[in-house]
Image 1 (cartoon, rainbow, N blue to C red):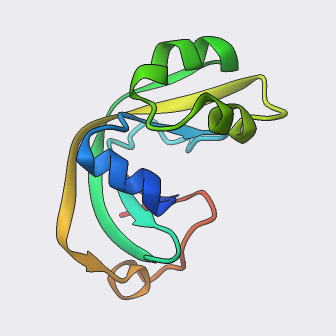
Image 2 (image 1 turned 45 degrees about the vertical axis):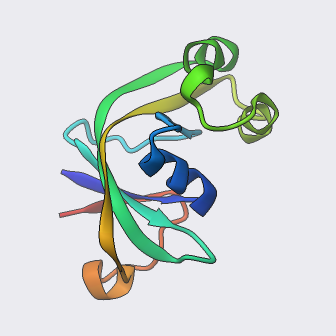
Length: 123
């Protein structure tokens, strides 16, 4: 099973370049059968640009999670802390085998959905 995640273009680019090996989330999908993430790069790109497999999902308190992931986070510690403000714990999805599409896809034409705020399940 796959989910589609909305990711800022600057971070999506780093995922496919290999410098961002963790995608951080405040909340996560509940279905344990999800094995792939389809990447929707938000505005100004507003297209589905690729996908990656889930290597593992870490769930921990904010400070220890940063210690574990910071080296390959692709973001600054300040951005990380701002993102998780008000949260005691967070998720880090470890990226495996990222594949950037040669041609970007329209989310509505391809999947019949609108861009998700956070994520949407795909069949």
